[in-house]
Image 1 (cartoon, one colour):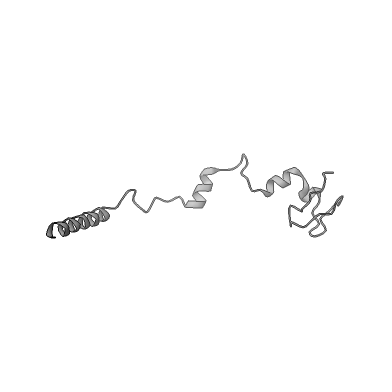
Image 2 (image 1 turned 45 degrees about the vertical axis):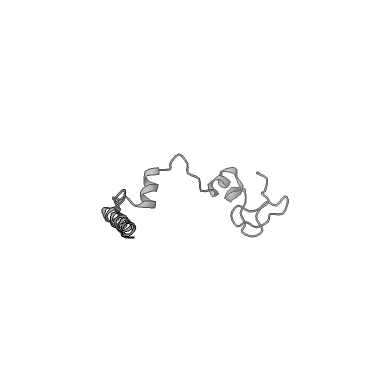
Length: 92
């Protein structure tokens, strides 16, 4: 039988030394004290993890709605502001 952890991996309660079950939730070696169960609690991906499915679920599978780069109207606004600034400098 695996040694009991200091804290229960299921509920986080303190486990007394030499305990066979968690006094809070009743977890034991079969339900959560094995090394495999501890690794499963971390939520790390395993060999069955599908990255493409994860990306689609997190970010959606549709097309990008925003264009890449700077939109044309920002360039026009920048040109108008520069022209106005130059005009102000020349009229002084």
